[in-house]
Image (cartoon, rainbow, N blue to C red):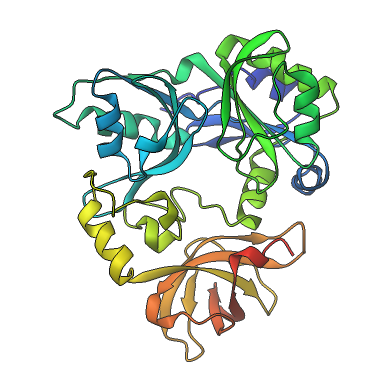
Length: 362
């Protein structure tokens, strides 16, 4: 017996527009509308739009909501206000990443957590099991649509369409009660592509009208394929590959989302404090292929003497440069920038080198 896939408010729109729809974490989502390369290049050079309504939304309220989110999450949520969001992680006691997410403070003691689609139920249950705080935790995912407008032309376009000034908005700043195509939305300066852009949170029933409005402005509809190549070129981690309950934020290269030196306690703090002070056992690296071959998730990484030193967490052929690139996780003692390594591509050992992740787009 097969379980029916979940659908966003735009499912019929994908079908009508001829998108190729796949199963992604139990959701029926478009992998591409035209081609991955065309959509990728549209975001790198102009502006594209993604339906990310499958993402989860969890709201935490109550008189101890401030203390709760500070304890549940690894970043310092005490610095949040009603215009500043934050990238953070939900970790277990061993410091492994249960999920990475963005947290918004919508009002005094009201927090809006945007979590990964495949982890929504896991995160909700995890948060509910945290004891000792007077809070109310609600999974509101079905009530929200989410759209991402990304690309170098995104800011000028969005400015033309909204009733607020977005010209000076910086990463993870947001505005509430913004009017967009006659609908009230939360507008966040954020995204998952490495380009300038915004994410729009709206009522579920308003998603299609807002999507159609952007499409009528000439914005290119984009699917999961381009979303993945764009985020990999920007070296942004994907939970379930570059992040997991067995990989800590410091190992994954997102230590900036952890604040173990603050006074407040949080889950996993002791392990993460030790890793900040003494270093983690493993290190996330950038990889560029020298020989022909595409490094895929879970391919073994070997040193020049064919000793196994780690594995690929994400890999692709970059549409922007044509190079085969990857993110990998290796033993920290094996790291050396510029070092030649080998990737086990099926039965072949293929030459590659360790590079800065910031070099992926150039």
